[in-house]
Image 1 (spheres, rainbow, N blue to C red):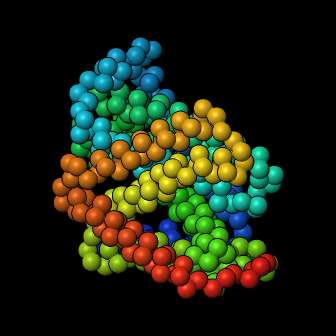
Image 2 (image 1 turned 90 degrees about the horizontal axis):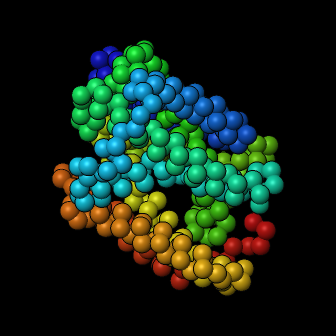
Image 3 (image 1 turned 45 degrees about the vertical axis):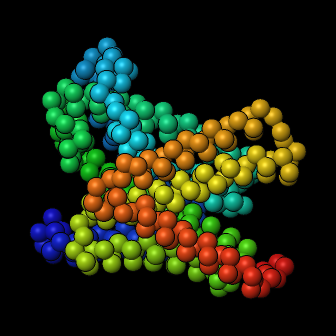
Length: 337
C-alpha cells in the first residue's frame, strides 16, 4: 500500500523510519519499557503463528509425515544454504547477556534466560518448520517460491483471515526485533567504549534514565542509515532485508565462532574448570559454525549474495587493521570512568 501511494524508494524509507526512530526513543527512555514492549509484541506475533500451526496440524490429522523424517530430497548444497538461513533465524538468543547488571539477580537470571531461549526457541522452530512443510504439502504449492507462506498455511488451516493477522504480527515482531537489537547493541557499544575499543563519548549515560544515550543514538542511526541509503538507490525491501540480514549473519557467525574457540582456555585460566564438556562441546560448536561460514563461499551463491561474503571479509580485515593500529597508540581508560 505504501508503495502505491508514495513510490518504491520512499515506502522503504518510511518503513525504515517507522521501525527505527521510535525504538531509538524507547531504548533511550527506559530499558524496562523496552523489555516489556518486546515481550508483549513478540507474544502477539508468536500467538498468531502458533494458532496457524495448530490449525494445520489439526487439519492434517493425528498421523505423522514420514517424508520429512526420511530427509527425502535433501541435498548437500541445499543443506548448506539452509544451515545459514537457520542461523539467521536463531541468532540473538544470547541477547539477554547485554543487559548485564540491569537485570535483577543477573548471575542467575541471565544464564537461565539464555538457556531457556535456546531450548524453547529450538523446539518452537522445529515444530513450526514441520508444520510449515506439512501444510505446503497439503496445499500442493512450493514453499521455496512462495512470497506469502503464512497466507497459504492460514488457508490450509481453514481461516484465511489469520494470514492478514500474521502479517500484522510480523510488523509487530519487526518493531520488537529492532528494539531488541538497538537495546542490546547499545550496551555492547557502551562496554566497548569502557574497554577503549570505541570513542570515549559513548561511555556517557543519561542521569535520570540510566541508559547509554550516545551508544543508543549511534546504534539506532547505524541501523536506519544502512536501510535508507539502499532504499534511496532503489533497492527493494526484500533485497534490503536479505542483504543486510546476511551481513549480520556473518558477523554473528564469526563472533560465536571466536567465543567457542576461546571458551576452553577462558574457563581453564579464570575459573579452573577443565572437564570433558569444556574440552569437546566448544570445539564441536566451533566446527559447525566454521562449516556454516565456509558453505557461503563454496559453492558461491549467485548475484549479490555471492559477493556479500567477500564484502564482509573486507570489512572484517579493515576492523582488524584499525584495532591493531589503535592498540599501539591506545590511551589508558581512567579507573571508574
